[in-house]
Image (cartoon, rainbow over all chains, first blue to last red; front, side, top):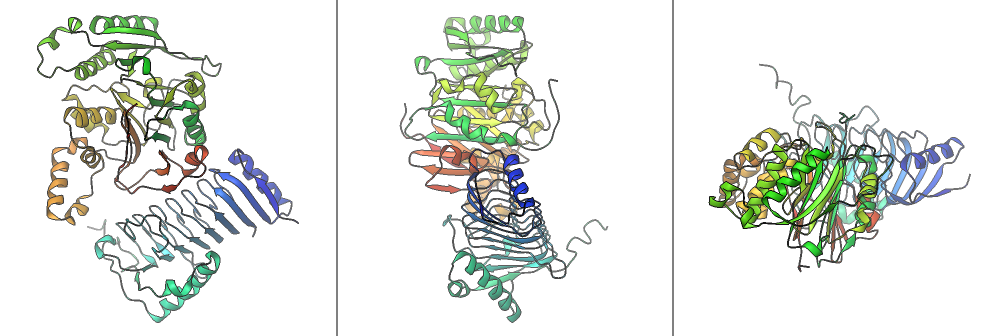
Length: 248
Length: 364
């Protein structure tokens, strides 16, 4: 089938999503959405590998629970991108809001610019399912809070907020799995209790190279320039950081 | 059903033109209506500055009454204590979808020294603003079913139970022109969805809209009572309007200090500060602990010369800011801004507890 172009201007989010779902049911696999502004739940729960190009500003919970689609946003996204997503890829050419990849369990989210607060909170991994979030700009507080698995890479390079710090407080608070790579330095007082930034191993460099190659390919960025920076990583101290919290 | 408990959050939107250019209410209406999903029809409202140029030296008292009797009593009280220059019913368009509306009147008043209430003649803290605050509190507290819900000069609040579109239609919001507008779409969670409890909350020149919940309401309310403010509107956000009046107008604290009192740095963060900042923030937290706003919030507040956006200290509610030439927009969602400004110069999400302050550059 041909690519389906939909002018989303003024269409209520439920109607828009019904149009998309009906088209998918009919076998449509490629979409272009024009003039999107604030419509929620786009591609949410879709479990077939469609391709979705979005022009405008999609609303809350873009790609929530999705399994397989490829989504590209030519603009900024709002809160809750990839909430509990399972598989697929979301590429955002602008910035994204709070709680990107909340409880994400697989797939990839690439953001060129900045993200808000609580990004990657409660991410998890199981066997071959390792979710990845790569942020080209800066992040707010609570990045990777309660992280149980997966990979977050924070570059701090393509930010619109030059005067702000690379990351906020409580980074990785309660983290008990997964890894956060940061390009640049992060002061230990910004990290959750018991965490400290540490050096990369050769294996880490391989992981970074693999994921950043794909990220640069998707967003047409210079891999060499990114890899020239000094990275550190944050990993959990124990898989049960609060194991004794209520044991007294 | 006069109230209902439900879940989820509210929507807020606002903008200012820094040179004071006036915009019809149609503009803010588009922004807040685009976030219809954030409310549930149990409250919406608008506040605007610059809307009453013909009475700009008088306090514009917007009064809402649940009965004719309450309206008569309120009107008598007002006329006994201040001079009414002009009065009229607030123009509305009756809507079939809003069968149950209160009596809504406005009185443009000024202080007449011959009409001062007895004790005020000798009070050391007499000034016109303090007197009007007393008048507002007195009406809201003592006249059953009567509420003065807006009392500033050359500004006004229009609010009630309904969706933003219903309130805009009902109050004919497009007929007003203002250089600052704020708007709210309500999803009441802990308090009744009734006419007086809709946002914005206003006192004198201050107006505020809020998404979130103020868990410190009880502490804030009791603190305000010590200064003569009485909370009668059954919504947590009411305390913020009165705290603004207390801290900014009466105590003349700098705006940044007030924002730091509302959303102070965490004690951990204070520990990391240089010595002089540490002393300042410790002092603010100790002296004004009862004015701290606990719980999640994104608020927009305004006075005749500025618009401010502020988040709680760990950013539990969204807030996006955008600029375009002389205009600054603030809203819960970027899409609401783009609805009225498709191509902003700059868009960003302010940090937790970091106020975005936009001052008016020229007075109108």
